[in-house]
Image (cartoon, rainbow over all chains, first blue to last red; front, side, top):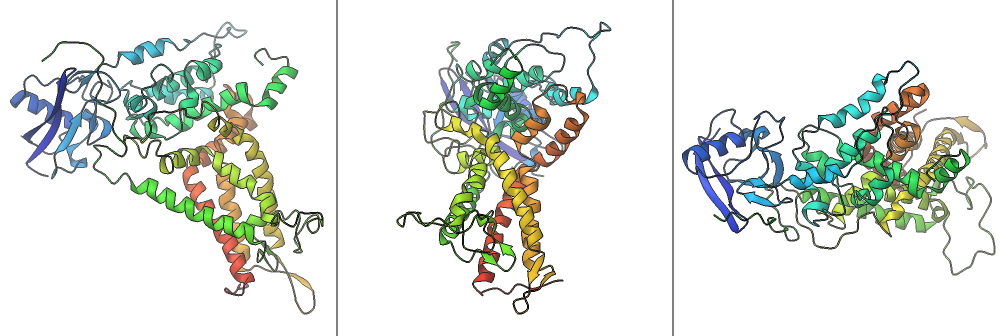
Length: 250
Length: 269
């Protein structure tokens, strides 16, 4: 492993900024966040970086390393080509605060727009039971650490800036966790189409690729939700079946 | 530095612009080349209307041969009233079904949106257009017909399995006696069916139909097992999609080459 490496870090705020090169010593086992902290300690005391757990569980240190949305604390230097400068920049989808820090508060507001969990009536014994097999499907979605890397890489938000029309992959995962929960009684299918813009997802699977928790966002959350939207709003046969069965929402 | 809190983002990247240092363009390029090659070949082969059978073998592009002149036809030759200005090929009656299935397939959608539309060209790479409607409105909202095309494609797949059965029975050209046998063509057609099955039975829409549509799959043990099987195949949907695309094209090529006398079909049994 090289003894030193150059990190091309984006410095600036809402007034403007640009990349600055910092060369620092590196050693076995270091991650990008270690190098950023070292630069902060030795060369740039005012470098702003958000971090917390350094273990890939808090989702705070999201950034773009060599153009790829990554958690800095989970990106080992031996995975990178250190013969060239390593670029580190803030997430491009979100408003900049300073240096590597972005304002991700839009995500929390968007999340509030999704109908929360509403328990179905209790069983005959007065309890709520769910089979292990039913729990397993939604368990995957609970792994989300809200790092918002999926939101950052999603081109609908990143390039088209459709924050008013599309809730983004993170919130599709959240909606899937609720919608597929066997104990939940609420219905979010119409909202997914009309308010959360699931139709804007064109299945590029970039969100799945960047998820540090390995959640199969596209295949297990978004596409199953798209299919439920088709059931409810596009498929004439399932609509007819619901009508014949006396189902409410036709 | 300024303390303003106005929501300012880094500018949207221009078309093809990225900080990625890997060769991100290889994957969309391979998709373009592979799909274009297949489209050109399958379009050409479908319009030929000839050399699509050899002995007991029938090209999957032409199966089922609803109207045609080969011994494999179901309902006889094309009607005499067929307009002379309209080219006829048995493939044109059936090929739209698998073509539509692949066109509306969730995997292929993502792949060709990136490769052909550059929407985006690759993850975290700048796009050529600022306007975007996605699958939220016409025409791409029509992709939602996928489940219907799936059911039609499953019917076609069943016919392809029937073709494999027929490909096990060879007619002696001299005596006319029919005997059991296995040729290389039989293996090719069978392999094609296996890979097509892996692709079709791992379809996202089928996964929804067999169990994904309910929150409590545990209530229907059969549905749960079916959901688990489809999910298992679905994890490798991309691999099944490409392998089956190759074998379906190769199956047609094999039958065509044998029919034209370019390749020799060897009998194994």
